[in-house]
Length: 263
Ligand code: THG
Image (tube, rainbow, N blue to C red; front, side, top):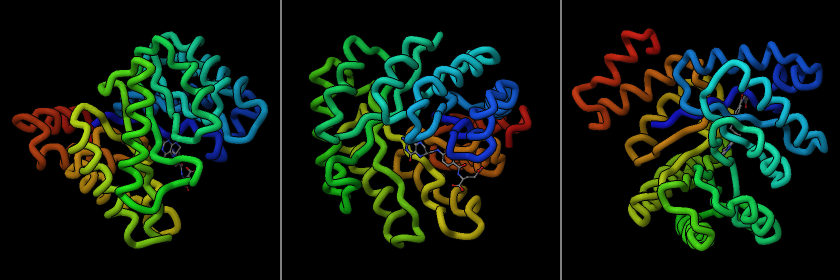
C-alpha cells in the first residue's frame, strides 16, 4: 500500500494559517513528521478557490523540499498551478488530479505531453460523482482511453473512485469497495487510490471507521490511500491488513514496522 500523507492541506486550519503567515517552519515540521511515520508521498494542497493557489503551492513545494526528498503529490484542480508546480519539483511528483470534466480535460492533458510520472484520475465528469459502480467504470474506461492516447501507460494511472461519507448513504462504503474490485478486474495494471477519511465524515469516532475501512479496501485491491500517517492505529491497520491478506511475504513488512516503532 502506497501511503500519501494528507496533512499539508490548506483546508486544515493550522496549514491554512501557516500559508497565510508564511510560516515555513511549521510546514517543514508537518513534512518531517509524516516522513518519519513512513509516508511514501507528501500530498500538497494549497487551497481550493484562492487566486493565490499557484503561488501558495510553489511556496509549499519550496519549503517541503528543504527538509525531505520524499516525492510530492500535487493536489490541485488548477492546471496552471499544477504546471508551475511540476516545473519546481526536484523529484518527479504525482499529479492529483484529473477527471472527466469536458471543459477542463484539454488543459490538463496538455500538461501530460511526455509525462512519465504517476497521475491520479477521479471517476467524475460534468454530471458530478456518479451514483453507480457501473457509471464509475464507464468514466474509468473513458479516462484510461484519453490518457493512453496521450502516451500515458496504465502503470502510471491511479484511479480514484471517490469515497463518499457513510453518514450520507449507508451504501457508499460498499459501493466504493465494489468499484475498486471492478476497476482492478477490468484493468489489472491500473492502480487505485482514494481520500480515505471521506468515509467517516459526519460520524463520531472517525478514526475507528477509517481503520476498519482501510482493511476492507486492501482486501478489495486498493493500492494506495491519501491518509494521515500520524494516525498510528491506522498505519497498524495497513500493516495488519496486508499481512492477513497475503500481501506481506513472511510478515516481513509487519515485523519491520514493529521494530521501527511504526505500529
Ligand atoms: N481524493 C483525492 N485527493 C484528495 C481527496 C480525495 N485530496 C484531498 C482530500 N480528498 C484528502 N485529504 C485530506 C486532508 C486532510 C483531511 C482530510 C482529507 C483532514 N480532515 C479533517 C476533517 O475532515 O475533519 C480535519 C481535521 C484536521 O483539521 O486535522 O484533515 O478524496 N484524489
